Structures are given as C-alpha cells and as structure tokens.
Length: 193
Image (tube, rainbow, N blue to C red):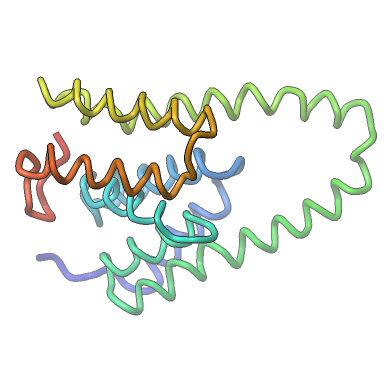
C-alpha cells in the first residue's frame, strides 16, 4: 500500500476540484473522478463509485459527503478535514462573490441569454457523466441487463413521484445486494468491470 499524499497535495487536488467544477453535481463529480482516480490514482474506480453511492444516503450536500469519504480513504481523519475544507472554502468564497455580482446584472439581456444557454450544457454534462459512469457497468455481460433494469425502474419510479428518493435508493441497494452481491469483487482494489 502506498503512503498517503501530503496534506498540501491533497488540499491542492480538492482546491482544483472545488474551484474548477462550475455547474454543480455533474461537473464536480467528473472533476473528482478525473483528478483522484485518473490523474493521481489515489482511489480506484470502484472506490470512487462506492463513495458516490454511499454519499447518496447522506442528508445534505452529497458532494461534501463524498469528499469526506474519499478523503478518509486517501488519508484517514486528516484526509476528511483537508478534503472537505479545501473543496468547500474556496468554492463558497467564489459563490458568494459571483452571487453578489450576479445580483447586479441579473436583468441584463446578455445575462438572460447566457443563462438560457447554460441549461443545455448542464444537461449534456449530466448525460456525459452518466455514460462515463455506466461504461464499467455495461461491460458486465449478462448482469448488465439486471443493472440497466434497476436503473430504468428507479428512474421511472422517481420521475413518476411514486416514492421518496431514499426509499428508491434503499430498495435498489437491497435488490443489488441480494441479486448481484456474489458477483462483484470484494477487494477494495478490484475494478468495477
């Protein structure tokens, strides 16, 4: 097992994530994967995906929970503090400044036009991230059919408003544990494919 990175290196990675991932969930999730999994290699794709799944169970901001989970995985208690602080403090300052500035220009025609263009971009980023995260799942052969069925069913239930999000997540987790639990590797270093 390789030694954990220094606090400075860890803070730099999360600072980059917090200050470069404009647009919220999709862009931040993409940046976390790109930096921590692909560039730095501090966590595996499996650990990243598991942290994302677990963070969905927490109340509040899921990305903060994910930063804490991955920080803990990378550097223990120190990793939690450094990761969450380095991601949130600079991003909060930027958000406060941009919010004050936006309040002054919110009714300008150019601002309204720019905001109209952001929606499709955010939708495209969300679809791109979903496809990127689904790629390992879809390579699971016959089990991919079960995975896709669970995804489609959960999406349909949530879209119809037939159940609360937490209920859908818990039921899908139980379903996955019962039907797919024996098929996935148990090692934390094992890939998701």
